[in-house]
Amino acid sequence: MKAVFKPCKLKGEINAPASKSMAHRYLISAALSKKSCTISGIDCSEDILATVDCLKALGADIKLENNTAVIDSTNFMTSVSSVLNCRESGSTLRFFIPLALCTGKEITLCGSERLFERPLDVYKKLCYDNGFEFRKSEASVTVCGKLKGGKYEIDGSISSQFITGLIFALIYLGEDSAIRIIPPFESSSYVNLTVSALKSFGADIEIDKKLDIVIKKAELHSFSGTVEGDYSNAAFLDAFNYIGSDVEIRNLKPDSLQGDRIYKEYFEEISEGTPTLDITDCPDLAPVLIALASLKNGAVLMGTDRLKMKESDRGQAMHEELKKLGGGLVFGENSITVPKQILHKACALDGHNDHRIVMALSLILSKLGGEINGVEAVRKSYPRFFEDIKNLRAEVETR
Image (cartoon, rainbow, N blue to C red):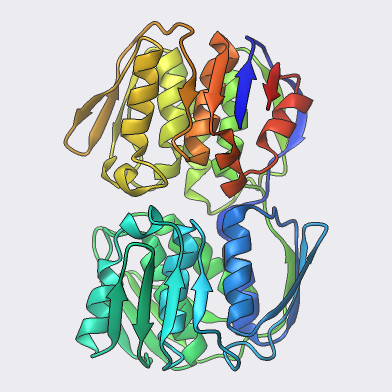
């Protein structure tokens, strides 16, 4: 599927899509409650559907209708499938491996080959240290063990998804437990989202000054709520405003814990000069920051190593597409420099099977015109992206 753009400016009002990060966390927290819960405002992206599938495979009854999930988790973890399909969702895979290790049964988590190129060393070590089974193939990982509550230690420089996954498992086990985070604590905002979601269901969990995540035994209760707007995807909509569009984005929580909330500050800095920006705690913003900087006066992004293991190697993917447009990137040690450059319309661009690359390139082509192949990748996080920007007067045809 391709998208063909003519140069255009967007205008209108739109609600930000629902936060994928919070939807994952609310759904899993609802299952852990073993009660009946209703979560509204869910965008049924491929990643969220992967989490729903895995929860169902572990015994939860979930009905999705009109962006609302009704969850009956009375039988959660009592009727367990031997296979969990994570599709292409890194969050789903890393959140569910520890839960699988709570069952004492052999469970295989499968998905795309690209998904299993992403590191799982933290869980591999956890399994080996406890005498659990851990077998990884090109498109699956099989685990078998019986995790227990207690004290754990995790390097804070790894993906927060590993920490969140272990938190979910320890909440399920229902014992006083703790996770010591070895600093630096990178992507801590995502762990804060996890803690916030679980507290909505009555979890007794705190992060103390020593970076210990302290989990107390507590009975979770039912909760019904609405998923807040997503700063990660809103950034791609708001970026159009910095190249001449007039889009009002609603449904963003001003005091949100989302780390990607910083995008507004970073966009201002890019508009005013050639800033150096640290994306350690907001790596998902990299493609849109690169796209906007390439249309402005450039920028330097620090903390870019994790971009290599996303849905694509995002730095390299943006470099390859910018080269087609007469530009490019300069790579350093854990950094990417976006030079000041003049871009021009070129041959068809490629989305690299990465939703955020597709949306970032859409920003550029709204200025230059041109086409992108593989735009169906937006289904992963923002299925309505092209429909939404068309409603905002984008001159784009998808076919």
